[in-house]
Length: 231
Image (cartoon, rainbow, N blue to C red):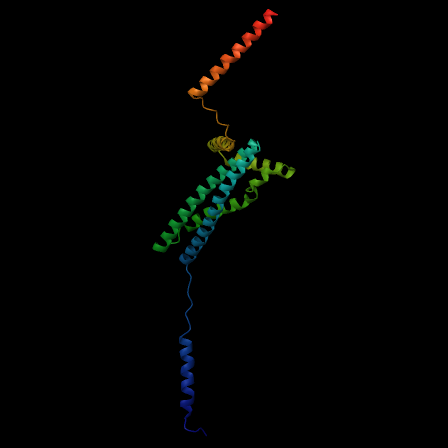
């Protein structure tokens, strides 16, 4: 016995509710190759830009270290530091070019929905990131300020790397920068030297007084000589 409600009235609304719930379930979003390419390009652009900022900071550190080494008369180590700076500048240019390529490729993929040629751009970016990661232990040029066996080993390893990475023009650029920093430090030392005491200015009155004193001195000397002769 069911009071007031029939069997259909009790069961039908419940059935409709479950059907409506099933219809509201979100459909599965399919990720195609183009979406994957866009995500990969954006991820790599972020990594390259982060590395670019890091290299910019290192350039300032290299200049500071080179100045300290010059002040301590360690020109060979200062030159080594500036060579490392030159290599970092080259890497920075390479990074900047890759970032431009990634942004261009990202624009092309988003507009044309074609993911071809993306692999080559991603590979170039991954290669330079791996290279920079492998060289990260040689970036701490502050170690050149120490005189230890480890520092000597670090200096030899850094020299070997730079001889492979830098061309003749880069080496000449580092040498020119060394000379420029030496000149800057010399000028700073001159500016820090105490000023010489002022030279007294002679006016006409002072000149007359000095002349009178000289005349009197000569007269006294002459009189002394005359007295000596009389005796």
